[in-house]
Image (tube, rainbow, N blue to C red; front, side, top):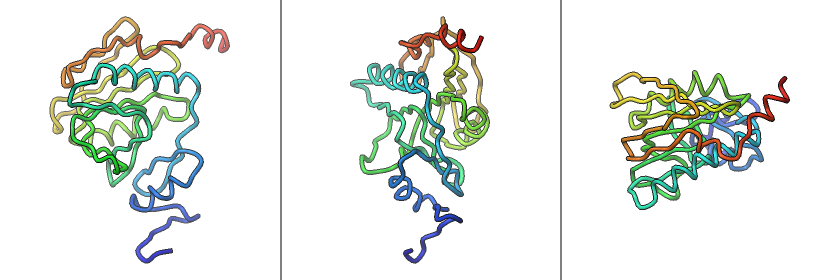
Length: 198
């Protein structure tokens, strides 16, 4: 182990600097909570489809604009140098192609899965609120059609919360685009899921 390298018990990294090379050598995805790696729960097919739909909907509307959309795999630094990987994010700032993190994410999207509910609805609300550049956090349901949108005009404001359903439109005036909520759910039939749970 090189001098200055810190490892948590079990050989896991305890600093952000050590986290990135450690995580790249793993077969499954991890986030970093500021102290230790945390495994990202496995995705359902529906979760993956919704994440892809979000990225596609953002990308096709942002083409030619100064803003870019990224899918899972691009990190955001939050509280105490924690590293989170939203399902999608948008930045309107210049990005460094060699960097592990987007330094000025303007909005983030998290698709809520069976193993991520508490983290997405509680932990990440606080963490993303602490990032001054983030003006909008969109929590996307994966078991039914619905969004919880948290937004603010400046970093010193508290989140304002809006709930959107199938017939609503997600309006994002800060990047001059609008997306029907139903577009995030293209290709997903919740009827089959309801029948399995009955």
